Image (cartoon, rainbow, N blue to C red; front, top):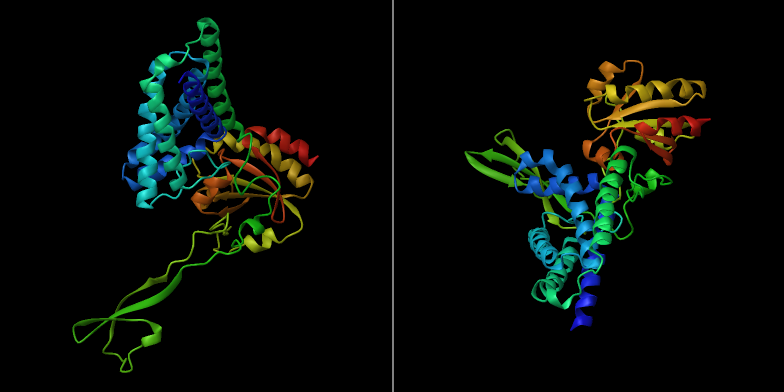
Length: 365
């Protein structure tokens, strides 16, 4: 029994450490996943706290995993992990059974798993943690409590520091489709085997006070001015599969409503995209922009601002071209607000946080 409990302890501890560390690499990504749940449950006021929840949760997962591995206060942490895994199981079960959320983000973007896989993984952990709760006396507590406290204190500080760093300077490991070295046009292609939804247009009219609906293939033979238009809608005929391009809805629109995406991505000259999700607090990164502009001008490299609030930024930066882009796309592309992308056509040569603009200047030279 003791050997079994040792194996259980190691599986639980290692899984929680891995899960926590993967998300420590990208706490912003987990916060966006939390916001998906908040949106579905209509508790929008929690969106403002999602990043805080993310950071604290990641720290606790790693901390608790280490505590279980080294045998520090097994009974207390077993109960804490039981409460946490019950909560996780409810979340992943809801995501799986409702179909409203495709992935819970349990292992971040580096190890994407479906909501179904997440649910079964949590059920498996729930069973293992129940063993820890029921038989804590079968596990040897640490004989070196001072060393255990030093290790746990170091774990606490390290996980907080790592998350502070990635929030300022981008994730250590970029697992997103907008990572360095990727060609955006390839990421925007439909994957092999993808089947799109089959849709049909349905027109809705009234005739002699009666509601009439039809599609282009069964247009009424007596259609004339007596038919009064009400609405049109897209009707799903056949559901496709879930295969989609890694990058969806990426387009760069000028202030004159011209789509310049193809021109930029098919070009041959290097250029810089400064991706800014919104127009607030632009003064905190304006200094970095002023630092890069002279170097870019000297090298004849165009600098373009990209934002979901392009019009507001254009009023502030009148000498620059400001392009509009979908806010959700920018959340994926730029984990740090804002992020510099050194591009050549559709190739991402480098990407830097605005706090690392000196590295971009050095790269240009």
